[in-house]
Amino acid sequence: MAGIIKYAERNRAFYLASFDHLGDDWLPSEWRDGIPVPAEFRKMDMPKFACEEQNPLWIAVHHFGTIKMMLVGPLLSPYQCFVIRETFLEAGDSPQVLQIMEIELSLLYEVLHTKLPVVGCTMGYIFRFITMCCILVALLSFSLFKKYYLLKQLDMWLTYGLLIWAFVLDIISIVLLISSDWILAAHFQSTKSRFFKKRRWSRAVSQLNFITCYVNDYPSLLKQVADFLRLRGLLDDIKGIRYLSSKDFKEDPEWHFIFKEVKELNEFLDGKMAALSQNVLDTNQVWLYSRERVLQGFTNSNELIKIVEELDYTKSALIWHIATELCFQLGVHQTSTSGNGSTSHREFCKLLSDYMLYLLVMQPAIMSAVSVSWKKVFEETLADTALYVRRTNDEDACKIIHQLIPNFRNPERDINRSLLFAASELAKQLKKSNSTPWEQMCKVWVHLMCFAAMNCKPHVHAQQPSKGGELITFVWLLMNHLGLGAHLSRNY
Image (cartoon, rainbow, N blue to C red; front, top):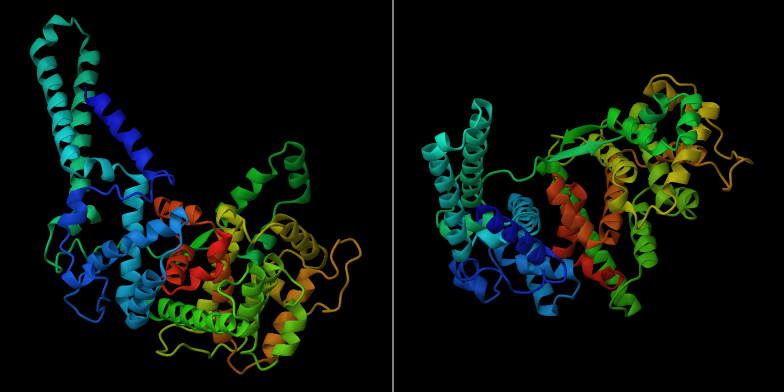
């Protein structure tokens, strides 16, 4: 009986989490009616983030319906877009904004990847009670009548262990159910409970560096053998894992910088749409306009545009990554700091650069829409690096690349110019640019991340909370809250 109930719960949870039914209003009535959302929320008035008494969990629950609509496809009404946008614009870079989005993704995880929608209602509680009773009855029955089963000592203790472990798992599931965000929102009134303040995202940002991958690359013979055995993909994955690291993502000033930049990008694209009398921009327009905006911030923007104007997203991301590493290792403008001086733009730029390369190499599902030719570009650039740079430490390799002649043409490549040399030229131009170019380079990386986030399919973003969460998913959610996602809505 217990097995049948659990199997039915699992299949029901799969059914409700499917994108065909996600948009239906299937939430249990206890969640819809029991959550103590203030009256002004139900009237769709804008909540006040600045109020210390306001519970971020209530705000996240209130806006959860809009996240479902982002995933299943239908566009939000203009009024819903206006309310959400003004809510988050009013909040500015308040610390609550990131916390609310953490909760929103936690709610999404519970809906899509757990049985909470099935067991977190009255019928779910009843069936969970029946399940526990069945396990207890089985355990008691076995203990009373074990002498009639003529079991060996080992078999008897194994049976005891399995039954007790099944009961323990049920107890654990009940504890997890009680501590879930949906249940907390429905049954706990106090905003000061420590459960409301728990961290839902580790804020660890994965890092991968091109120069490190090259310096520690496999011998060519080993790669040829792997190609012959069709194990090259496995070999690349092992290398990526070996040199993968992570850094902590700080709310202040790193998240504040991203929020400010996404807000300014949204305003810029709104202005472009108004000037063109368009309601939606296509992918190419967003790419060109947003790139133009960030490059204009450099004092020698014309020279930079000449280097990158003919490059697609994949090539642009790679040469910006190599150029960022060259500037970082060679100590270009190390005095550039953020507004409060706690973390330098230089360190933040390095974090974003290595994170974007990690996404391109290790997360192809997220970047598939913008990295069509990535594998070919990456392998050719590694091959070009092997021709001119000896394998040494990262700093010495960067010095060699920085000294390369920028107008090199590689006749063996099917491209006009080697990206390695384009990156070297870009680094030289960045060195000649503003006295403190690191802040503008951070904007370039936020621009690249925003473009990848808005082109990634919503269902791919929905999968990330079950894998620990990605910074790019938070950027995607922020863009949609600020109205930026609507610019490419028809492309989904």
